[in-house]
Amino acid sequence: MSSSRRTQSERQFERALKVIPGGVNSPARAFGAVGGHPLIIDRGEGQYLYDIDGNRYIDFVGSWGPHILGHRHPRVISRIEEALKKGTSFGAPTLLETELAELVTELVPCVEKVRMVNSGTEAAMSAIRLARGFTGRDKIIKFAGCYHGHVDSLLVQAGSGALTLGTPSSPGIPQGCTADTLVLEYNDLDQLQETFEQQGDQIACLILEPVVGNMGVVLPEPGFLETIRELCSQNGTVFIMDEVMTGFRVSMGGAQQRFGITPDICMLGKVIGGGMPVGAYGGKSEIMDTISPVGTVYQAGTLSGNPIAMASGIATLECLKETNPYPQLEEKTQRLTEGLRTAAAKSGLPHTLSECGSMFTLFFNPDKVTNYTISARNDTDLFARYFQGMLDRGIYLPCSQFEANFTSAMMNDDDINQTIQAAGEVLQEIA
Ligand code: HOZ
Image (cartoon, rainbow, N blue to C red; front, side, top):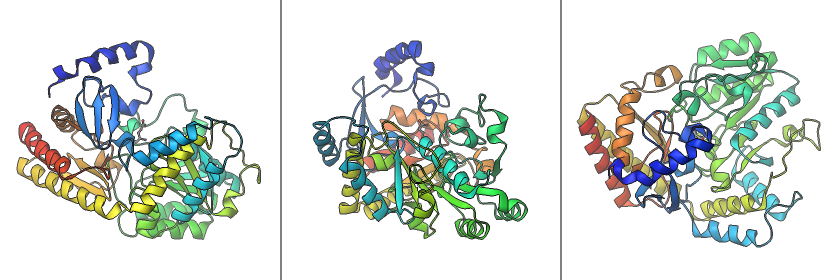
């Protein structure tokens, strides 16, 4: 498929550019780092996306993570339809909110109580405020290359679109907002220990992605999460895991279950809403009860706990719980990543691949990527050519070297084989 078969998308994107900044409602989906124009999507079906030109793509974006069950899963759709018949929003409690909260507390190790919000960004903003309110301290630790949404105090050396588009910090954020943000290198134990030695009694919280998805997939080195847990406990610092990407993705109970390290608070998003706008933050009751109306830390939202979004989340989590797709999904992903490794090795291009469960990134980098400094050395020009070649062959990848690819439970052997075959061709072509 060549770009001449995407003419409707091109035309409609031109139209969008006139009325939407950059033609997109979130910069990560603009094709800024790979060239060309975004596809305008008509519909999704299982593991496939269809653009308005009628082209079909195997979808490794999955709406940036939510669609672990694929698009339009029948159980999710029917639960949404059922909820729709009763109304779209009440601004008052419903049974659905309690049902989803019960599922989350049952499935996610650290969560005793949970508050629903509308996005991962909102969850991050609220979790930070909560930790500061709970401890009475101001300083926070974040790690370079981790992205926690576009929260003012966290948009410092951030990953995802901020890294893709080369704006690791943003204008419009007063210096005061980030003055208390300490930015450390991911996986650097010495730096971590030193920081706690010097300022441990002033640090309200440490926030991190337990498996980073926003500088490409980067795994915690052995001992990293364990040391964080220990230092946070010793210093009375709230340990916040951002499981927006990893929650219900790298295992049913997220990365905290997979690695056996329990944070004090975690943030959730993406899979929890099954494709509807849901974010959440939850953890120990002792901390969560600091939030209004029980405590004095204020956080609110007209559409928080929206019934349609809750219905979608409930159906998704119930389906994951009943079918346990994780072992199969991981096996499928490993077959795919093995194929990609072999194809990349044959091409002779500098590469390394990292993966966790059904998340992976093929980096155009000769070194193992363990932090932001190494990830920043990825060959993004090579990635752009790889991306375009794959798109031409009907494979839809995240349009940045610094994002995670996601597989879905709907992908079959043919999809995996087709993707490996396409990657082999493209990598030879660009070598
Ligand atoms: N949070 C997503 C993963 N980096 C990107 C989605 C977006 O920013 O639009």
